[in-house]
Every structure is written in structure tokens, then in C-alpha cells.
Length: 301
Length: 270
Image 1 (tube, rainbow over the protein chains, first blue to last red):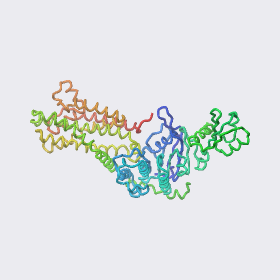
Image 2: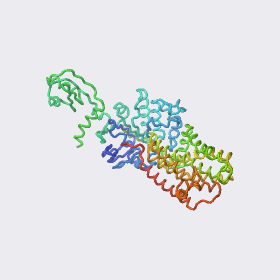
Image 3: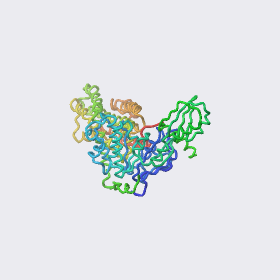
Image 4: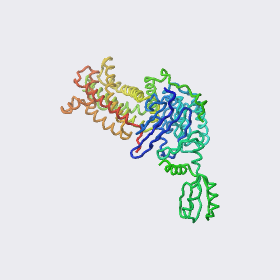
């Protein structure tokens, strides 16, 4: 196994499902020891990209390599750890049995006791997975991704459906494992999760990579606010305000997306435009992605 | 933060070839958990045992002309035993694989470092075990209520032949399982199983067929399998092309299975 090859190398990957283009010319390189967040709205192509990297699906075009090998060969996947969907755990098997089954595939698995302890599952070892709560299943699913002591861990929405406490505990366990030297790729449509885990963030939308930067830089770009107010002013006039990335008008009510709500409000007040009912709130991540898609599509084109 | 010191602590690659689990170990691993999962739902096992044994009770045991004759008894039991193996394999593989493919655990298994081979062999081992277990009550009923009394070597040869003759059906099951959804697979398995069983002489002895059906029958895998099994149990003559017919179907179904597996990527999204 060559040590110089990047852990993940995706080159011009394209994947379609019938008429739908899930990924279009996506290139991504991840080096050893990185912890990368894949951020994007539902349906953006995050899970498709992961399924290409884990060898489950084949790209229609382009190449995928993990550790310099084709992920569709079983040997390449010895260093790979993936989470199953928690709804799909074999219901009749016990927690300890599922762990042993998964561990049995790897040359140097994590001892069962250590793995269960890391995810606070020790007391549940003799329970059938069908009888676990949603949160317990989620923890087991994430624990399974580390069973083979992988050098590359792929996590698809790891903490969806967990309460705050459970989420924090899981993040800590994952950060610990990354600190031990593993490369981690995590997808989420929660900015909070990406902020807690990732150092590098790749934003995916509409099957394209929209941004690939440090956590701080990407967060600044998607920290969007929505400013709404009532006004009779012309749409052109409103759109000319500083830092406005999108304008919606519903009768006399304007709704603006902005990357800098302070500057926008200050300008709105000093411009003398009459307005009433001013509201400023954080835009949803979905809205932030949309504004990112809009601005970037011009640049990319 | 991708500082060099983080990289330094990357574990040495665990690719010491000697320690990578081999084919046999992976196959046994999959067999073990396959068996464990199946016996946790015992009705699946019991149901499989029941049908051929009940058929034996209702259709063979009352006919004293059959049960008093050792050869006819063997022929009847062999037909039902062949049916039992056939149905175990077609259901375990056809419906079982189709159901598994719909569970999110299956795509997950495909991300582990075991190829299709160990998974299939594991499933094969567990299916052989359950097919064998299902033969036991049938054998007991035959031993108690009929004149069938093969010598021990013949008995062992017969059981071995039964399981081997089931392999083409196992392949057919896999092909169905990897090609269809579980609901479609149940329907297709039933549509395939009963006509094949009947035309193969597993319910009604092929010796009683009209001549056109008797001839057609010899080209079916069920008939070829049945006659090989009867030959093994009773030492009677087998028609010359029984083995080639069975192997031919086996090769065809195996090729179709490989094609379907390669094409499959778990659930379909449209």
C-alpha cells in the first residue's frame, strides 16, 4: 500500500439516477488525518458521493480511489469504516453479536469492550438491536463504523434524531478517534454538527461542489440573515442596498437575504426609505445554501 | 487542523497480509450470523419442515400399495425430499436475498471488506444446514410409516445427492433474489416452484405421466434432480442425460446470478 496516495481521491465523478444527475464533475482530494464536513441541503448529492467513496455504487464517469485503490475491491475497504443506517440493524441479533460480526471482517479490530465503552453501550451488549431506542441504535450504528479500527471513517448524518446530550457525546467520541490519527468525512445538513466536527468544509449543492474551504471561511459565507420589512419603495431601490444577496417581494412586504444584516439595516435607515415592521432573523441553512448557489453559479459559469 | 504531528500518529497500516481474514473465516462468519438470525425466528424453520412432511402424511402414508413397496416408498419420499430442498433453497435465496436487499443493512455489508464470495458461501452453508434439518422429520415419517429402508451408505449418498441437486435451484433463487423486489420474488418463487415440482414428478411420480410430459419432464432440473436422488437411494438406473441436464441448468442459473449481482446496487432509486 503506497503511503503517498491521498486517502480519498475523487476525480471528475459523475453519477446519474435515470434522468436525475446526482453528481456532476465532482473532484475532491482528502489527505491523511483530515476531518472534512460535507455540508449541503437534502438531495444535494452528499450521500451519493459517500456511496461512491465506500464502493457501494459505481460512478458513471470519472474515477474514485481510496488509499490509491478502487473502493469496489474488498481489499481497498479494509481501512474503511462506514455507519449503517440505524433502521437497518438486524433486529434479531444482539448488540454484542452485531459488533462481533462486523469486527470479524477486519484484521485488527477494536476490542469489543473498548468499542462498547467508547459509545456507552456496555450495558446493552446482551440486548437485541430491535429492542433499542432510536438514540441507542444511532450510537451503535456510529460505533460500528469504528469496529475495524479504520483509517478512513465515513459518517452520513451521524447524529440525526439524537438529543443534545447524545449528540455531544457522539461528537466527542468521533473527535477522539480523529485525534488518534484517522481521516474522517462527515455529512450533515446541520451547520452545528459540521461546526462541532469539521476543520475543512465542502459545500455541495445540486450535484456540484460550491465551496471547499476552512470551517471559518465557509461558516462566514453561509451565515446568512433574513431581513423583512414593509415598504412602498421600488424593488430596484431595495435591491441596491448593500450586502443584499436575494430579494423577495410579497405585496408590500420585502424579504431580503443578506450576509451582513448590520450593514444592511444601517443603510436602510440612513437611506431615508420609509419602512415599518422590521424583523431580522438568522436564515435557515437551506436559505443560506440557496444564496450560495445563486452567487456561485455565476462565478462557476 | 492537519498538523504534521497529527499525521505522525496515524496508526501503521493494518495490512499485514497474514492477518487479513481469509475467505473461509469470512464465509463461516457470515454463515454463523445467517443461522443465528434465522433461528431467532423459529417459525421460518418449522414452516419449512412442515409442508413436505404433511404432504407425506396426507398423500403417501394412506396409500398402502405405495407404503408396502420399498421402491415405490423411496420414490415418493425422494420426490417430496427433493421438493423440500428445492423450496428451502428457492425461498431462502429468492425471497431471503430480495428481503435483505431492501434492508439498509445490506448496502452497509457491501462496504465491508468481504466480497460477494464469502457472503454467498455463508448463505449457502446456512441454507444447506436448514435444508438438511428439514429433511429429518420427512425421513422419520418415511422410516416409521413406509417400507422404504435404504442401507446406510445409500441413505448418506441419497442425502448428499439431494443437497447437491439443490444447487441449481439455489442459483435460481439467488438470481430471483438479486433481480426482484421481495414482493415480486415471493410471487415468482411460487410460480416457479410448484409447476417445476409437479412437472418434475415430485408430487405425482413421473412414471405415471402421459408420454409427452414424461419426455419434456426429463429436461427439467427438478426431474433430473429427482431421478439422480432416487438412483442414489435405490440404486436404480438413471436416464443418461439427467446429470448433464442438471449441470446445464446450474451453469445457466449461476451465470444469471453473477450478472444480476454485479448489476445490483441495493435498492433502486428512480
